[in-house]
Amino acid sequence: MGAKRALRTAAGLFGLAAVLFPAAVTAQSDADPVLEQRLGSFLAGGYEPLTTPVGWYAPTEQVRGGDYPDIRQLVESDAFDADAIAAVAAHAGRIGSSALLISHRGQLVHESYWQDSGRDTYFNPQSMSKTVAAMLIGVAIAEGHIASVDDPVGRYIAEWADDPRGAITIRHLLHMSGGLAQLSGDYGYAVVPENPSVAQFFGSDFVGPILGLAQVDPPGARWDYNNNETNLLGVVVARATGMRYADFLSDTLWRPLDLADASLYLDREGGTPMMSCCILSRPIDWLRIGELVANRGAFGGTQLVPADWIDAMLAPAPTRSNYGYLTWLGDQRVGGEPDPRPGLIPWQSEPFAADDLIFLHGHGGQRTWIVASRELVIVRAGRSWPTEWDEAAIPNAVIRALDEGDAQ
Image: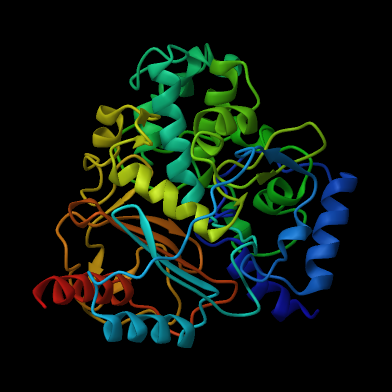
């Protein structure tokens, strides 16, 4: 791979999901054999985050699902205009999706796959994983492991107990307003081992670079999308609960929701997972994550996440009105020129057709759109860049198909 190709690959690598890594003071050692092996295999494969095979992520740690994962049956629904749904699926396939799934009132009403995918094909949901991390914080508070969302992180991160950065609160991190620096610094998107963000993602220590992040803004002063603020929250969850992050995720969400086993990307065997992204899983299982949010944390008669915590997740952040606790709220960037690729702040041709639409947002167009008022959840997955992107296109078409079906 030539230098120009490597830089283009890097631009994908440091996109929304796994790898816009915030800035540490020092990079990992050049002698890190894990860094050398993983970075070498990534470049040799010519990958980007969207084209990286799920099997490339190693080592991983299992997130145990249900003993007998629920087999969701596809049901015919007369609530939707069938021709309109067929048109939505055709659009999703044309722009390069690998999966499109729709649930209504808890029933699977549409399921389409492309690119040699099927129901049991695993994918990387990228930063949709962040919203799951926010739910785990809520459960940890409810169970008494964390006293309050306004606790300073220095209470749980011993290395910052007497450090000014320890005053950052859990709420600040959930709102992406902790004020910590971005990791890549002057290296930008360059895929070289000297780049601290490359050293983190491909190296054998995900946590060390986080603890070296400088404070560049006062906590709560500015919204700045920063993957390592979510990774820091994951460290808080693990240390506060005394459990492996994968085990807490399994016990609180994955097994109770009766999902298929998933896995997390680790820095090294027995080490720490990347928690800002990369819950390697099936697209269909994200329907149930969306349904859990739509049902205010309840599933099958059991309150898995406190309802008031879901409400708090969907309240606007003081620093950004259309962002909650690691969750995207409503319209983002309406009108103007579309982006050639879906970026951090997604472009949409028109406002969303439902005032209460929220979504889980992953690099490259991984999406879970949720409209609680219509008991509607839509999941779109992709393993390559969409050929075009309009954030409103798929959800609005489905909402209108439902409204037209109701009118018939």
